[in-house]
Length: 383
Image (cartoon, rainbow, N blue to C red):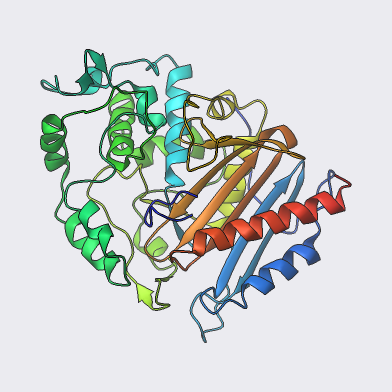
């Protein structure tokens, strides 16, 4: 499994829509009671106190919240609870790059230096430059993290978020470009998969430059104008901050929220279950050419996260599921929250699972719940 914080774990035009949690349309059956049973079993884990689950399946919709955000407070999450979605933010960035490509504003084969001011002769290896497609597939050969962070992960404990925050709070966009111009590639871009947060930040900088707008403004214009996702953004206002859930770390105690002075596309996004449901439907719309394009395989030259069947699309981890066909998934891990977003475009199935707890094995617990849900969908629909 991949994780944005704990790295060693595992349309064009559509009408504006909003999600009604009571709405049930024609299509396959979603076995709500069985899914709730699996969620409640996971809540017996002393580290997991809340879950928000959203499912869209060929016209049917399900959204349900379990447990309490803060133990003993009886505050069950709602559709409007705001969560940090961490690396799932990259799927928004992926869509925007795909949209820009369809609009002819950029090409995946563009040398990234086309969008940089100054001399970046270092962003090539043996004459082969870093291309935009290399940023999308984590094959750019850029570092995994900004300077000063990687060494912190040799000592993973409950205080790690505070140490990470101390480094990130002092890191600026200006420092980013200074480090970028000094970085020396030691591998040919496009040949090896190696996760890079700075690479995703560079991609976010490029999309901002292409549209001459902030990342939040581009999300609103290119996605928010088509569906209702008012709480999906990098920077929250005061009212939204009041709805941001507390996060709990690997020791079960409340931890800090993630912050960054960079552009935010690598993992600084926030969203709500209601927004994510609308986003899932947006991604599943077969008229949404830019979204469908993000599920295109871009790299499969080696094992990705230890699975020989994994491939990389536009940041999405692509695979195949026996009963539901092509799968695209992305994990997000913040200091005190984790989530998985799974899309099965051939089956018109999408699944979002979020908890406000983050530990070394939280990701695998959520994957286990996802597998339980898929099994219940199989049984209920004769697959």
